[in-house]
Length: 228
Image 1 (cartoon, helix red, strand yellow):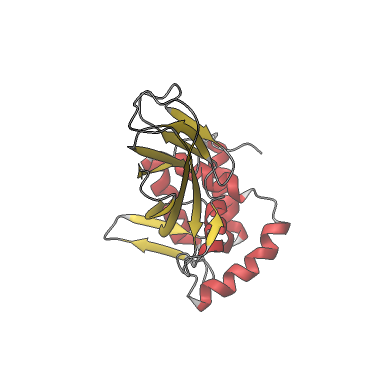
Image 2 (image 1 turned 90 degrees about the vertical axis):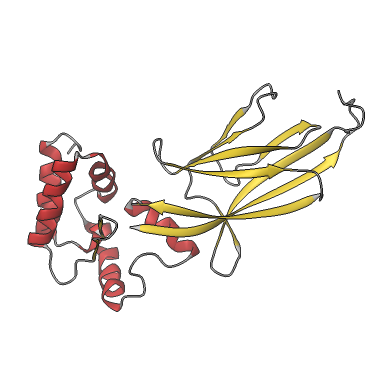
């Protein structure tokens, strides 16, 4: 599954009364903030990311600056313009990188950029729903199954977030085994998407029947990918 969204970088700066090492370039205080945009262009906290790293010009004393809370405000002082890269993490290993031009042409300016979330966990999908539809949200069958799954999620003995995270860590052979399980034991309410062209398969875990969830949970226990 791939989910497309837009992020917005908001940059603000002002001159400050500090001596600049380059006389013709006054010292500035600047900050960059990161937001998510919905389909109407409204700003939302970028809570889909748990860590954001700003990679600044190497002349900075601390060129790699990390933030863990939205809006991930990066504040610094300097005199020069430069391009930075920004790493946005959804997990410790999964990141999306964008680039941002820091300049002093306007006291405040916006930079909207498209981003793609590939194979997001069930927890991340829920967060992304706050800024627009995902996957099969327009499918009446999927909506019906999702509503039924809300109660199931509250009552279930299984930790669906652990299942989702564990599936991402399986070897290719083990993952193919799980996909075959899903094909063989799903029911009419199970929401799946098999993109043959891209070679991608996704399933809404909350829409799986209990016996299938137990089969996958037991398999993950055997592989020591989850703990009871």
